[in-house]
Image (cartoon, rainbow, N blue to C red; front, top):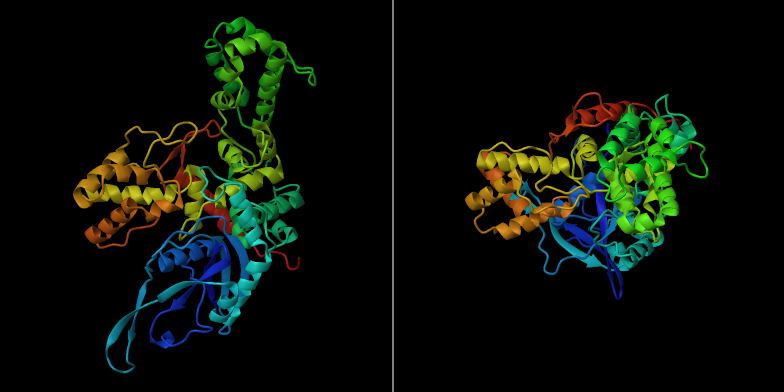
Amino acid sequence: MSEKVSCGLLMFQRDPEGPRVLLVHPGGPFFRNKDLGAWSLPKGVPEPGEERLACAVREFQEEVGFVPTPPLWPLGEVKQKGGKIVHAWAFEARLPEGHVLCANTFELEWPPRSGQRRCFPEIDRAELFTPSAAREKINPAQAVFIDRFLKSGVLVCALLLGFFGCGTPRAPVRPGPKPPVAVDLSPTQIETLLPSKAKPRSQWAEAVWYGLLANDLLPRQPEACAVIAIVGQESGFQADPAVPGLAKLVKQRLEAHQEQLPLVGKPLFERLLSARSADDARSFRHRLDAVRTEGDLDRVFRDMLHHYRAHYPTTYATVNVASRLFDVESLEALNPITTAGSMQVNVRFAEAWAAHEKGTDPAHVRDELYTIKGGIYYGTARLMGHTAAYEDPIYRFADYNAGVYASRNAAFQAQVGTLIGTKLSWDGDVLSYDERGAPLDAPTKTLAALEAFAARYAPALSVRELRKDARGEKSASFEQTKTYKAVKRAFAQLTGRPPKYAILPDVAISSPKFSQTRSTAWFAQSVDRRYRDCLAKVPAPGR
């Protein structure tokens, strides 16, 4: 008999008088007159293949009516009197003024043996309580979550996040200090899940364990296997993977750019390539000819920039050659490799994730990415850092390749196309974006289709509001916009089918790392096979 599992979230709100927590009261006739001990966290049962945290987020959204926002701090698990295991996480939010519940309903023959079936809400009340009052109201077994919340340091972490301005970040923000949590697997146990080619095994296992904890995730087998699968797919467990033909690719980029340098031109560039740094006897040209890995390439470019600034200060200041060729922006423009490390993390994402640390240098972030520990830390943040109600982890794997919420947005695009009778690309992007990921005002086929949809099915939705909603497509809050809800509602009414939350995006992957063009679906399916193989392994007993 399978274990009964339920997953939920403890929302807390900081007020001048102290914290308050949100509890819900079950609906229906059996709980109508019950109060003390009857309340609960918003929670529910995972769907087949659904991640526990995704289940908790989905249930909260369905029962309370808005999307939880990261960070979510683990509170462990408890066993209720009937044997059900409840897993919980805490997060901070503020209950909107006049908020109305949108809970699901259920049917029940009532009164008993009357032959009459009545509809009741699963949840009939949601209220904020002080921790002491919540202990009396909540199911006795779940009262442990209140105690863990108060003792774990979650409030301190939330305060620090608020101090650093991370409450509503515009870019990915690295989480604050990690509160103490109970863990499922030790590094030694994670080591038994690694493939044979992962060496040194203890270092990889330690990095996976640390990367999960540092990103506010319990190091359990599903989470560990997801990270292990991405590492296996992206680098084959190489901290600084080699790229075939990298030296040739870089040479082509440099030759194409050197004629664009104002005033300096080819002679100065040739002298620069013939120079060398103080700690390496080889010229920059020879070092570039010998690069094999992304780390090699980054270090050469940084040394070239340092040498140029030191030996050509007047020219550098006059024509700002470095700003055209060697600084952070142009380094990325010249470098054909925009991802780094064992999990091939997008470098800009990693820099944004670490940006809240005062004095963080992009070069330092790059160096971290080429280590076992750093590559997995940033990769885990990239994989698990966005809250989505995916029914299967394969969609999270697709997001890792195509961008956050690409799978959710691809389903949205498919539904818009169905409603207006046109074929749209399922690339997960409603808008177009510049090289740094900022949305552009340029028209897109999906945006035009959305405007046609609004004119036909949602005339009250203005073009201005629609475009404003579309700018939130890379966030969980997109699901709460009028545009998103209107599309889902119209699709259900027109087709008679429930709209899918996610599908695999249709995005071509063209990279110097591949000998042929691949797709996001291929990537996600390949990772998923590795993930399933890892799940089939039995971790070693003990700690």
